[in-house]
Image 1 (cartoon, one colour):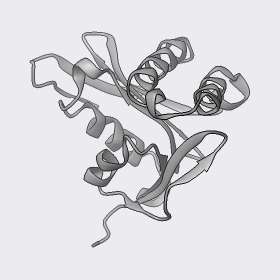
Image 2: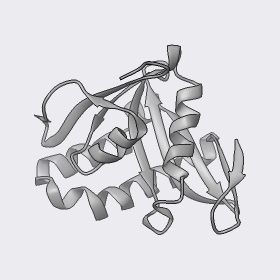
Image 3: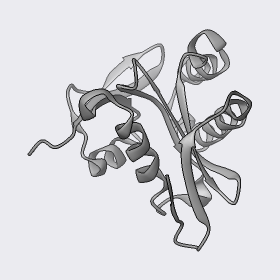
Image 4: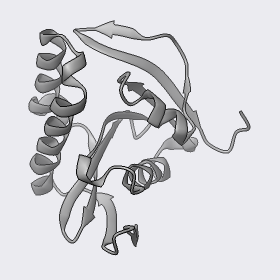
Length: 158
């Protein structure tokens, strides 16, 4: 999918090639460190790093990238045949430009029956709610990772 970035650059959102995956995961790690890690205990930071570094887990994900002028400015990943969002990060210099929404729409197009779930960090929960997700349970804690289970069901009146 191509569209215009508000600054005039062409925004391209597409599935990533195997050679682009490492750069996308580096972006995820950098954004995680800046915005989410400060609210996590050491175990949670280690758990997240292990998840993105372990090919047995990250290698099974479907990764999407958002590019402006061939620079990756956002990334997202799904698992479970495209029904669960595992990673979703946008370079902070590109926040509030529709890049997250474009990534979300790409994932939604590839999800079964227009339904997506996510275990949102507390930091990102409001962003997911603006995209149309609803909480399905209270905040949880597992392996030091704080999250709120959420769900998006397309074409449904809320």
